[in-house]
Image 1 (cartoon, rainbow, N blue to C red):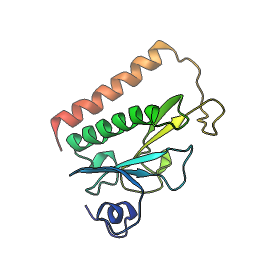
Image 2 (cartoon, one colour; image 1 turned 90 degrees about the horizontal axis):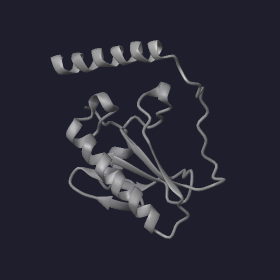
Image 3 (cartoon, helix red, strand yellow; image 1 turned 60 degrees about the vertical axis):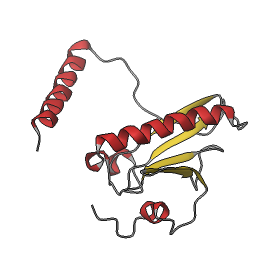
Image 4 (tube, rainbow, N blue to C red; image 1 turned 180 degrees about the horizontal axis):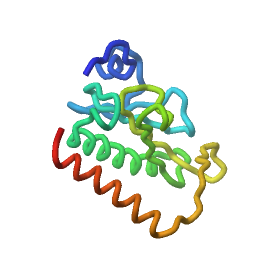
Length: 146
C-alpha cells in the first residue's frame, strides 16, 4: 500500500509534528488539528491503510481498543466531557478527507457544536429484513475470500 505524501504516515514516522497521547508498535494517537471539542483525538494505524478494505482486522481491533481506552481517559482528564463519540469516515462519500484510516475520539457535552443530520424515521420490518439479507450476503462474500 503506497503512502506517498500521506501526512499521517509522515506523522507515524516522526517526520511531522503532532501532540501525541499514545504510541505503541502499531498505533499512534494524537490531538486533531481541527478539534470539534477540546480533547478531540485521532487514532491511526502506523501502517498505511486507505480505508477499512485495506485495514487488517487485527489492526482495526487494536485501533478500536486504543480508542476505547482514550475515550475512558477523556472522562477522567478534567476536560469537559459528558459523553464520547467515536467516528470513522471510510471513503469520500462518508466524508473521509485524509485517506489513511483514522478513528476520531472526542468528548461531547451539552451545547457543543457537533451535529449529524439524517433521516431518523423508523423503517418497515420487510425493508430492514431485506437490507439485513444484503449485509449477510456481503459477510458470506468475505468468508469466501477474494
